[in-house]
Image (cartoon, rainbow, N blue to C red; front, side, top):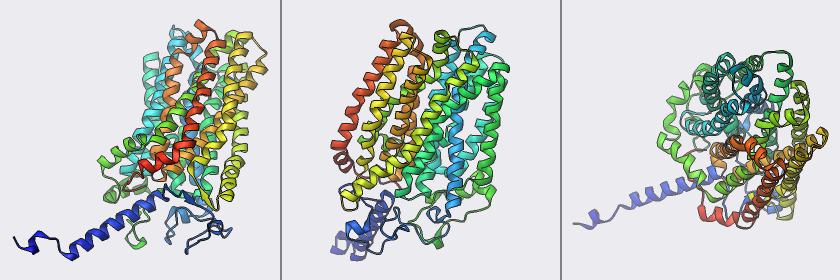
Length: 523
């Protein structure tokens, strides 16, 4: 065998080296930063701009760096970006609103179907579980088919199953409708972070996540609030027909205004795939033609798994599971507790739900400034650099409120405190979880920006699985041990969960460096 056959040609080596460099460059573009140095946000403080594009203030680095293509979502107008944000926020409002509507209707349903409220509540548990499981499927399909068509088709299914919920004539039919509605309605709740990541820069995201999260967190309280007033004078089916109408509105907003936000900046503007007609983009025909430029189906499936096994993502989801489950548990069973304790009717239950609604609004207002102030303080103190773990610092402010809220909620129930005291301590817990939710979403997105959908889906799965589990035994647990003990234990679990945050603050960066980037084909 000759030397020519034994050794590769110099041109082949050069081509291989060039391919490796291009792959590495694409990984850096998708991942946006290096784990060992964090983000470089302020070019003045960092002492280098290297010709980078910056925000209007002249020194905040734009991350990711936008292309020069007007079709790049990062280059869209303020109005167009915020229309997208509003549409996905409204669609994200729907699943938990519909889910929690059943928390009030379960009493008249139990009377109509000749069973007890706890049995009817099992339909609620199935719906809550599917809100999480459906989200994982949503982001998997979005990675392969594109963002917009998955939202469109899932909302069509959600609208149909919402009508089925309202038209159900027995518990079995109602339960089946609720399970399928949970699976399909969660599309923007689980995948909304993809749209935020696609259209907003790093320094803008925390506030946009705060807006989107507020729609999600407030929705399970708006459902019972409005439903309670409706069932005061109307049959239990009326609130579900209203929910159907809200789905119709969401579908109309998506069809009219939502845009396909996926854009690969590693492809030159001249080689970007054709956008196609509005109908083609909505139905997925246009995205199907360019599927070879995204993930294969196998890659789309592996994305969801590979994100969860990243240590910081798994730990974040575990923390969320331990702290948010009780919010779902309280919300799905509250009517049972307060009817017995205070003798409330539907109207009084409705008024009672104003408390968490106000708490979420306050959490949104405080978070609008708190998360940015937290980040800016660190950036100023560290010469323009930023580490994702900084996002977690606000949890040391929010977590004590969740613990106090849970413990005192149990005390209030056990000691028959005035309903106003019960409302206030419930509001403390909800306020704390609103602030915590934004911090966790921002931390996970900053850690793995190329996995915005998967990060969002797993965090959503964590809270819903926890709620699914607790809703099965919340009532029986409280009845057997008393609310003082049961909610005291829940508060203790939240207190113990702080060690997860401490571990992430100490070792989070080292874990990210050790685990490395995800090396996805696309964002």
